[in-house]
Length: 310
Ligand code: CP
Ligand code: NVA
Image (cartoon, rainbow, N blue to C red):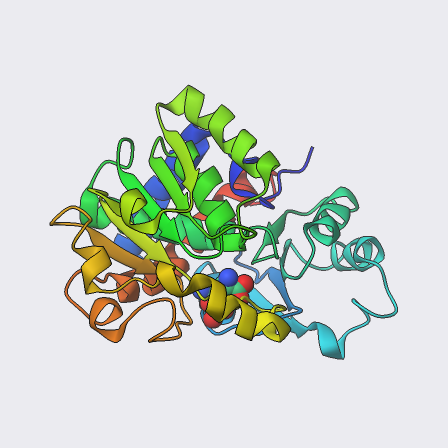
C-alpha cells in the first residue's frame, strides 16, 4: 500500500517524530541527501493561491536533486475536464510524487486511491498538514520537547489550520485548545479523532468559545486568517463573528510569560492579530515560514523511503 500524507493523522506519533528529527538534520545540512537525483520530477498542483507552499516545495524538491513541476489547475485539465483519479494515473507514469493544494478533502482521497505514487496534501479546506510539520519543528526549536506543551488556536475552528492543530498536536502529545464562536467549531469527527489520538500520547483536546479562559497560561498562541481561501463571500459575517478572538497584547498577556505566537501566514494585521503581537518579540512566524522548506523535504524523503522509490 502506498503511503500518502492527506491528513495529520496519516502518520503515527513515532513517524511524526522521525520526520521532525530528519527535518532538523536537513536544516543543519541542507544538501545532505539527494533521493530525487536523476532528476526525478515531483508534480506540485495548485487549485488555490500560494506563496510559501509553492516556493518551499519548488526549492525543497530541487535541494533533494529533483525537478519540481508546478501546475496551476486553471491551466490544466484537472478541475474541469478530468477527474483526480485519471489525472493521477497519467502523472504516476512520469513523476515520483504528487503534491496538491485543493478544496475538498474527497478529491485528495480520490487521487490517492487511484495512484501508486505518494500524494501530499498541500492544503485542503479541511487540513494543512505540511504547515503543521513546520509549526511543530518551530516549536521544537523554541520550546524543546513537544509532548506536554499547551497550545491555543483562536478563530475559525472549522478551518484547515484549527483541524490540523487538533490532529497533529494530539499526535505530538500536546494539550490543544481551540477557541471559536458558535457556528465555527471544528468538525465533531475531527475532535473525536484527535481525542482518540491524545488518549494514546498523553495529550488532550479542549474546544470552547471563551477566548480569554482558553488562553490562560498556555505555552503557544496561534491564529490564522478569519477568511480562508474559498470563503471570501462570507468576509463581513466572519469579521463580525470573530472580533472577540483577535490576538492582541491583552490576550497574549494571559498566556505564559514565555509564550510564543504562531501564524501560518498570510496575515491580516488588525483583524485576527494586532501588528504589535505578530511583529513583536513573542512572534516566531519567520522561523515558522522558513521551516516549511525543511519539514517538507523531510516528509518527501520519508515518503519516498516508505514507498521504496528512493
Ligand atoms: N502558509 C501557507 O500555506 O502559505 P501560502 O498560502 O503562501 O502557501
Ligand atoms: N486557513 C488559510 C490558510 C492559508 C495558508 C486558508 O485556507 O486560506
